[in-house]
Length: 453
Image (cartoon, rainbow, N blue to C red):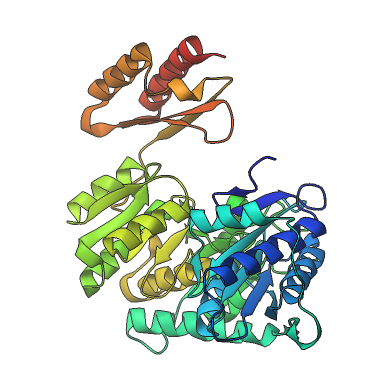
């Protein structure tokens, strides 16, 4: 059987790859593994579950709740809430387990199941592997009063809104940290369609919401953080000071400034890193980012006296690096940002609040990002390549070394083999788009000639 868990839970085409039967089996296995690890000792276990707005989440959420309850776990069913709300409420309710049914920024037909451990942290790889090994096993079922109860708990979403608003008030040192700011919000017809605009308004902003009318079918459809055109148009049309866009489960946030220019995750990280440095809350004056973050961010942080730690691509690896070093801020160019003082996972709504508080306090988003330039970046995906030889082929490594020498401190070269398919990603940054394209094309041709299967 192909491995079920990827870097962000179990995902697939809903009702074909990810079925109701699999959702039940995963939930039962999770209950058994965590119970045998002593997580439920001395008390009746409780789980919280939440989902995004895609229609398949209705039957998958019901299946997850049924599986947990049949294994003797009480369930608080949050309904439609962002992924970070599930993480937060797992901790605040002192639940033993959190479950999210979402495929994040994927198209509507996909869906996924992701588990959080007590405290709202993602499960370790070893625990996921243990759950996977137990899927479909025979087991002794509880009966009578020992089966779990399922309690509708949509009202708990209000606690999450209160939490993120309290967080930005603390961060900004103000009871109305967004006063005077007009913000456009693209909710991607997703999980933050209600709580995103509500939190921003509660913190003092004037909010113009778009794409906040989910119907079960329209999540991420040409909108949200993967399609910024509608937000850019809305900001200009309504004369907003800035705009923010969430993805389907609102664990990421991208932005546009008042002119409609895109502000990516690197620039948002840079703005928050400088604010946290100034407030003394950026631990060891260090920002954690992935190897895909733009060289422009590295140069801007160097000028600001902020160190950077690089992690592998994926928010779980960013979080691992943050926890290992005790760092308080990390994230990805895609808009996954983790602010450890307030959250255990990427939180798009929180990111929007914190960034907007800086606009209210320090000036336009365009001005805040002026020193965090993105160097031209070209990414070429070379398919049909033997990814196992990327780091051992001497001719390829010599070509990479030559490109790096020519670019010097004004550019960067990264070759990254795919973890799931015969594909090698060639990424080049340079002072000009022409230089970046030239080096990327040349290295891609070497990959084709040397690593073709």
